Image 1 (cartoon, rainbow, N blue to C red):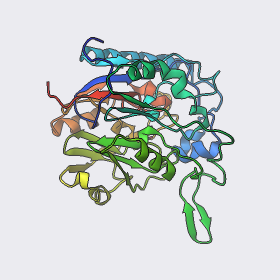
Image 2 (image 1 turned 180 degrees about the vertical axis):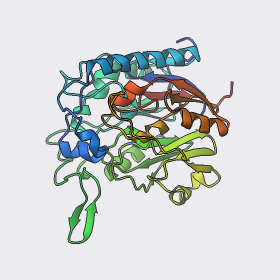
Image 3 (image 1 turned 45 degrees about the horizontal axis):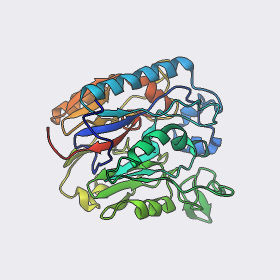
Length: 358
Ligand code: ABU
């Protein structure tokens, strides 16, 4: 399939036909080794009991997750999409986390591929270790691609200093709702989404104001970055809060953001904005445990184009509702990838979405 789409980067939105993509890999993924208060801030509290820092995820889950990712890559290839895979890395040995969630660390904006200046220390080398070859190939493709590597952190990283993962107060005045300070730029790419020339994002436990300023400085000319006010106390990644299905139609998670707030952003003025009416049931062990994510992960679907959308095989009620909106869900098993930290949107990076219709 590699002849179909040349090595290239070009994406302006989340719904134009997907032509080229990175699909992650799960082998040797390990529980992230961040301080407990950081992990606690970013996930439902019941998950902490199952969390085992500095250990591999259960091998049986990783093996199934790898099968699911390989299957996803095959599904994409059969659709004529060019698929890149990261290097295999022993994340436990490297004290890292995973190669299964490339969306957190890489973001395409127009013809730029931007590396996230991760907050989590265990992710600092993730892009170099797993994606260097992909970045080299794309960067040397002579097709105007800009590869924007994250700034190196020199000296002590003080991002967590003074933060306890809860609202800090100074008298009665809250000074921060987040677990990171502003001592350096930090963001995860999954805290942002493309809506044409406007990138919409959120502040979170991994994305700070300096990170947003940094992103504004590195996006190609003509793009702007706007920040949504969310009400998500565990905020980390916007891609289970917003699900744009096609131009002019977006589903949102009403416990995390309001229609009123979305309407403050010019880009959504003429959009149909639908609060997701399906309330997901928390998934419990033994069918694989969700170690880090909320049940709203069903919104972490991935559009292949303005009709076809990848939905987790168990999310049948959600898929049926999407069908009433004129979408054509493609049901793909992904529960073991969900278990280690994300779904289809998290596990991929759009490299090319072409505005041309088939
Ligand atoms: N990495 C996406 C997680 C989103 C959620 O747990 O809702």
